[in-house]
Length: 153
Image (cartoon, rainbow, N blue to C red):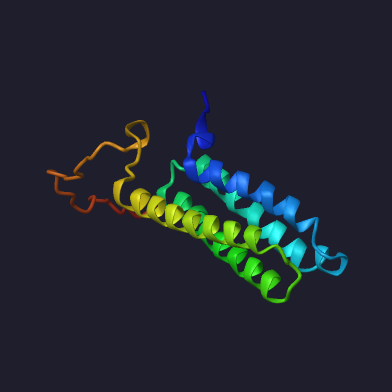
């Protein structure tokens, strides 16, 4: 049974896609393997990496959301790299392009829905919540009375 971040469908999907993009990028023409190929490898691997980091910090809602948004941004960036590779004819296999393009668009939708879920439903776990305490004082404080005495010489 999977544990932690590996249970998340967006993690599983983004991890598998990153492996496929890595393999595809190594089949690009030599001049692209080190330019656009390098870019698409990094952006595709950034998606699951940010999901993992966000999940590790999930105790803090804003941190979790921050990394999920970074993951979403990297997914959109990966789509742009795919389009550039296909339109510049560095990637010539139309079937692989269309498959990856559709799967990354689907992943973007899943990540965004997960972001919306976390934003709406996330609650700080009970073990780290501070008890709600009203700080009221029934005492009134007055200025302390001090006695100034002259020192004898």
